[in-house]
Length: 138
Image (cartoon, rainbow, N blue to C red; front, side, top):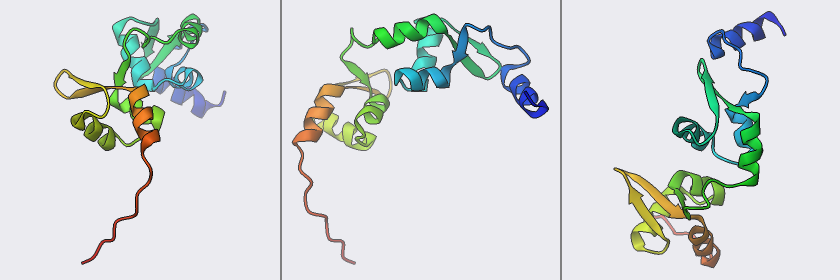
């Protein structure tokens, strides 16, 4: 490891190195196809074993297999709007509009957090056919 890499590692982990059985949260998120903010929320909530070294979260290797084998959302069919947008590729604004129109199953939890059914979002997006492009005139 070069001196620059050592300094960067020391800066991001606060000088403490994580144990060998922990991996960076960002790499785990990519591996199990879950948004990094969701993994961080699960870590803060105690759903997965994780430690924060400096600015970075590190997840225990055993929990990676747990996440790959079992989806923690199975008890709740609704997911946060941001996750549904990332999974389906549908813009968040469109998902909020569909929720307001009642076209997809959704509920508002807390002050402004929308939870939406992924299956409904996929179903509605598949039934839509692209319409003609609007003509803008000045």
